[in-house]
Length: 308
Ligand SMILES: [Mg+2]
Image (cartoon, rainbow, N blue to C red; front, top):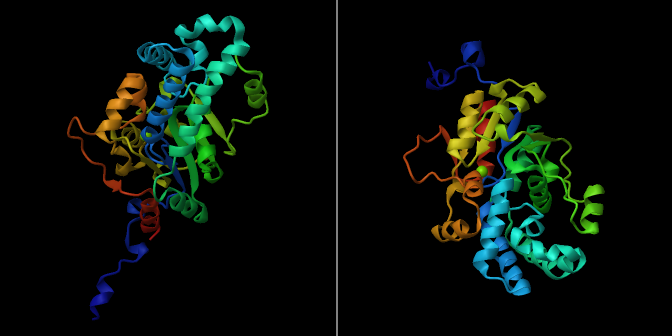
């Protein structure tokens, strides 16, 4: 008998209960999985603080602490109206036009310039997303970032067109004290992405809660076995996947943050916000998930392997 005949097991020989279904949707985390959040947020916040220092002549420490208070309150370092909400700048509010032109806009420009320069997709992300679309696999984002920040980042990276849906935490309304141009742009949808379906989740759905993932399964009407969750954070992404019965793929490449950036981030970012955005897999021994990848594009191999 030819030896090769024994190397293949026909699908019929595998009991139906043991067969894995093909992957129909990939749910992916955004920060630290599709791009490095730290690589752009650190220079962007530092540039903004530098601008505020030079336009107001206030001490850096007061500016940083006042901004951190606002970031802590909103749970994000990208709350777009942090300057006008910071207590130390309230004295300028009585004439918003000059405050806006001389202090807010230069600071926003400094932030945006650094974001434009340093926000980049990780290697393999575009190839991975393209491969998913070619295979007819749905792409869904699940992030703990607020809706506005998440949409803007995907749009700026040019990745929004690959996504079928995005599930993010609740966004924030535009406050009254804001530039007219910002209000008009917001009304015209200028800050929105091309993702066709965007769902806002309550803060209680923050990962590791499986709530967001469970809602995605329900909305897509897919069995948990037909879905893969990719994320850089073992404690959050992989825990949510396990809880929802979904295959977890650990984006290990996203966990490497240079120590110098961690130190600079601690100075300018509220601790709660850093914890939300940066996976810290260094302080204790964690059990590694079954699948770990060094490049986002590797998910295609896993998916193709599953399809046989
Ligand atoms: Mg992440």
